[in-house]
Image (tube, rainbow, N blue to C red; front, side, top):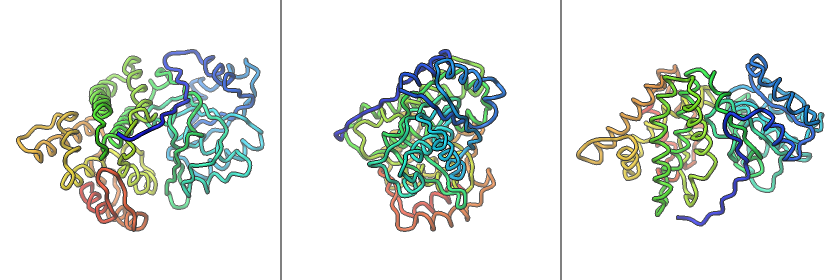
Length: 389
């Protein structure tokens, strides 16, 4: 286990709490004029936005609205948000939505600081000595875990490429997580959210770090719980208790607590997916991860089987007399789990040409090495894509 310093100043307001708690949190954190960032008009149609604004104004705080954030948030739109934040002289950013909305809000928070170019910070991966306006999150779609994380991703319009940073300054000051706000989500978003959350656990689990049995077991337990919770929720999406479990799992999977002492984590699959699938092809992030992770496991297990064997045996219930047969069985069980949620298991199923994906890999991952558990180069990525085609 590595030395670590763990800090998480995100205040979690969890459960079926009144919207007044959002205004109370804003007041507690010193907000006076707030930029409210959101995505679709669903928040207006169901009255959620109006109710939250009513609580904000009741506490004598001012606000500016900025809607229209899309999935895989676009740089051009985020820059509009920065201009509105600066012109409006806001001092706090409130994101109401899922990971895309919260990620864009974080980008705006960085860009709203005088003298900082948020795009150059993200494009060059600058994570030190930056500043940001404080951000708060109201979660309406559990998946990305951005409501309590240090991460933010934006997508360049022209190329479709995604760029990200991870910095403590953009971790939200509070996260209001009311599972009731998620109960109208369609099955597709439950499936994609499941895959996204599961992938956050997998990336941390696949580490070459030694003497991390405790966090290994926490991660295995979280993944085992998701295997049970997700199909039940998919079959009964009106269940508040199931949504509660799902929302909490999504937040804790990506707020860094399960990676303590694990300095080396993999994240290769995330990087491949972000650039080549949800980036260039603009598909749902979870959908791409569900296709790539089994392919990554099949490939990496040929040379580094131990941790993949543990996952397949302890989490997926893989059976067999040999290490290879347990791995094969476990990966098959994982793919069955994904298929049960309607998630594709090949690029062809979602009409993406694997040749174009491989071409992108050669262009964007040339001379790069990805991962920590299974260190891979562009040649390895090509072979993984072949397994996912």
